[in-house]
Length: 430
Image (cartoon, rainbow, N blue to C red; front, side, top):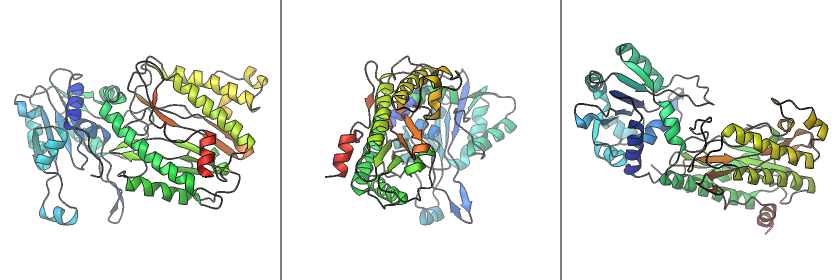
């Protein structure tokens, strides 16, 4: 691995917290992700299932984790099954984790080879009543591909039809949404790597460069600083492209006098940063661009203050909508008639700001977190308002990652990344 892993004690505490939420006489199972084929003999780069990673730290394919606090044999209360390295694998892929290495990373003392799983699982199944199975229940999920976890669930229900089943996901949604100090340090590292990339862009950006050239400059800095790369598909949207919220073509030339919106960030150790900056291609903002930019920045700063313990996600967005409405009135994009005639389900500000302002961040860019529950200290959220004006040919979005505090304003993990107009212009015009 390129990154410095978290301590084994972190994973021990995560498992302990998860186990504390299980019903009596229950066994929980977690599977790694598949390696997905592209065609012929090509595959996508492996990405570990974030749940098994959160509970074990094992970043390797063909891994299974069992948590069974009621197992008769104490050594079977936590078990890892990992892929065994044979001579061919060692030659072609390199050696996989040894049992000793898996113990050191995870803190789990009982490690078996994967081929022993069914035999041991059969023994343990006779000792429990409930299986906790792991399904994807994220509010944004739209999975159309059967996963390794899905196949296991089908097999388990077929082979052990009289066992009751429970869901692991609601427990993990609560646990993973509140970050430990170690996790926040990983996120800070991802943000710091992102900063290096953005500062490179500030000295590189000029009329005539192509969006994909900016992408290349960013990935260079991310990789050389021990990131696997982008935390998500990069959005590098110059001019009117910024009005396409999920623009990822990144194939247009940057033109003088226009803006470029960069929604790009690095990952580190499977933890995702999430940043957006909007920069002037010629090095200076026009008067109109400044007015819209400062309006977005004000909304971001005011929205950040609303992220406090006890806040409810839906109510937070309602309040941010009011702040945005005021700014749009000031820019002349809305008038009083627009406000008077709006419908509750379709507020007028949505014409220019149509997406949400904040989402959980962590092991996923859109991380776990039950949105109906109050916010808590050490939850990490993005703050990302935007104003998009197709008729004027540009859009502005600004985004930082913040950690909710027990009291006071959240800590901004991206506080060192330039965002004020004066600083950006000074750096682009040394």
